[in-house]
Image 1: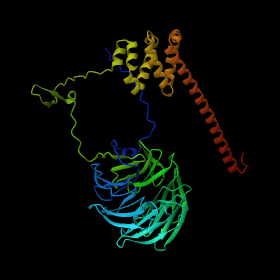
Image 2: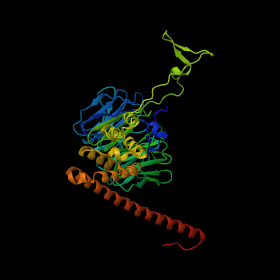
Image 3: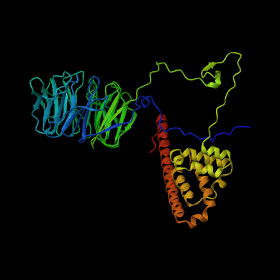
Image 4: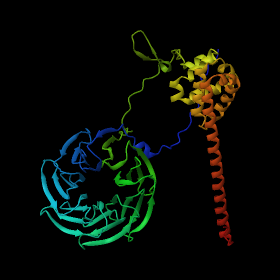
Length: 511
């Protein structure tokens, strides 16, 4: 007797293509920390264990990236702090704040090494220069100042911005080049040897973040919902405008050895771009608007801070080493080994007759009922909330099998009001799915034929049917709008193609 064949459950392909970046950036579940206020800046140390500094409210925390725990806290600030940044050797930190003072802090010992005073407004930017002996800071008093660390004095003051300065960067290749961005929409490049700006470009929006490659050639600016790529060696030529966010971009960062660019936005997304093609290669979702984002130098940890004080720490899943020897797989008993009374697996000899022990075929509940010709019970099984909510494709596949057997009417007969409501709810939720629409339309027509009198007598069923009718009407309106839009797009493409053809042939352009 032939064995029963399981119901074919069609698996629909995923809408998103799996890329190398998707596989590389597989992240573990996020570890969420609640901080005291909005997390304005995150910066990683360049040395293992790649601790990261988190600036928020009146505190500066240093987290261990392996244990995800706070290892040091600086809290002796009277007002909000901003832009806590490591020196390249990871031994010192520089931080600004609403007090208008720039402080130099020791990471190992809890004391302030230097205090730089001169700003008359909050300091939102504080960074070390590439030579590690100077610090520059940008303030709401419209000035950018360069400080000498040993003498604790101001070397140079730049006063070219017309609005508050909110971001800055210094390339690793040149300690004398400083890039700053402000709410005057301008990005200025200063040369400390000339004591003036050598390049000015207009971003078009208040600038929230700037970033520069180590070679001083290209730099990025973020403001509004767009990122702009500039070529400094070509006199500030605009190379590319990237607009993939819906709200203001607040933070930029590099990862994967400068091969990838990160952007965090108030739309709760962090997007990753290829720094060659500037195409989006990955997107991460977060529970709140993003103010800051950073990735460890070895790409093992990605950290994001939100406006409501949530700190998200996610570790990248370790890649499996293809060179490692895999454990030996247990060989199937029925292939060439058999079990004897000693409890050991013995390899069969050449002349032995091995009798295979076929495994018992497992059938799910609905297939067992279909095998026993209990069609109504099989439909009930796939309408169970655990099946229809998580795996609607199974419910639809069983309906297709009942239609193929020509028993769908008998399976739908004899249903009470509660069962009808469950059926209508399932159809209402899934009928908009193009993969299920054809089958569910056929089932809906049969239900209306069988239970037309029941819908008239039951108020709950009538109300559910009216909602379903409105849903269908709205869906038809959307389909009509989509068809009209596609028609207009086709007309535009046809006109553009015709104009191109006429231009190539030397004829006039169609208007």
